[in-house]
Length: 468
Image 1 (cartoon, rainbow, N blue to C red):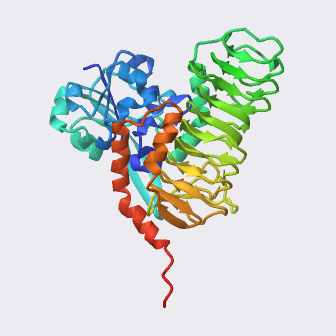
Image 2 (cartoon, rainbow, N blue to C red):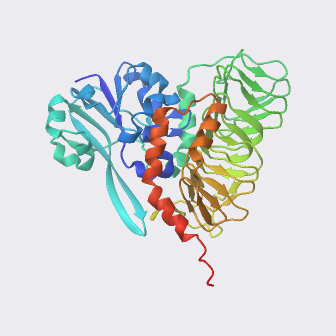
């Protein structure tokens, strides 16, 4: 058997706008993206990594900052010749830290899990191929690997029900599994020490925690370790009167080379939680289950939410059970609902006209695509979905829960956002991230893909002309 580890994607549309600009394995839960968890498993450390993704994403995937280590190992994208000798193929939606991952070597086999959901009021069932181990002969018979996903039984190798594999199916799956992932990934870290900065107030046992001697933890900071532990990495500043409450689970504050991570005085962070590198927590209340990728600005109240990275929610307002992409700006006072008044299950329109019953009443908040902006005091109903490159202007709760791509949404009126790409370039440059030709090509592709949909929604909001 070869030494190839191939990470593929399927059902990408089931994650709404979040996977329009990234492969499924680029989604985040816990301390890292799904691809990093898979490729970073100890047993796969020497494997040659290959990614299979939608063609229009192929140019941007090597530029994803979270995949830096994967590509340093010589990863390829959409290159079937690179794994013609076979290998282990893993669904990019698998959460490796919560799974018993299969070995690279072994007999040919395909592992599936059954998934049931409600789409537009109708019960649906499907099989998800969570992994396949195929040798060169099997690859030759099958042809394109995508054929395995279409019909696993036709591949001519044994198909079995997967055991011990956890995969995300929809955005709310990431929220449901967030606390478990954070706890599992904290336990995987081997760093423990006894260093305690002078003047820090600790309740409970210091054992099991790590505080870097290159962190700056101010006197008067409080660590409640009764039931949990903390990891405070290098170049992390924790100011006086900050409360790190680990009673509910572990708190991980990632090492922050370069720009410092700052937890401002008066902030409260409840575990399980992950604070990514170069984050700024500005007198915020961060409740359990939250994890933030790099370079985020966090303020107000946030609960069980995932921000992939490079996004701002630094003012007052509530964000709950949300999954937020990159380069999003959550305006001051913006708030989303994560519970319906009648406590019924939430239906989510992940793409226009396709409504999925989440079968959840509390773990569903909102899902925002990359480069979406909200104005002051914007309010969102439970299960709202905002498209990529949107600018949302509201002074009331809107009945619309699916908000268009590449558009300005102004209290129910839709305007085509012709300055979206220019704004994106400006925003990214402020964080030292270039808008590359490949990134522009991806966005141009998506703008064309959604042109008719956005225009149709725009026409539906135009007021009829007054009769003479």
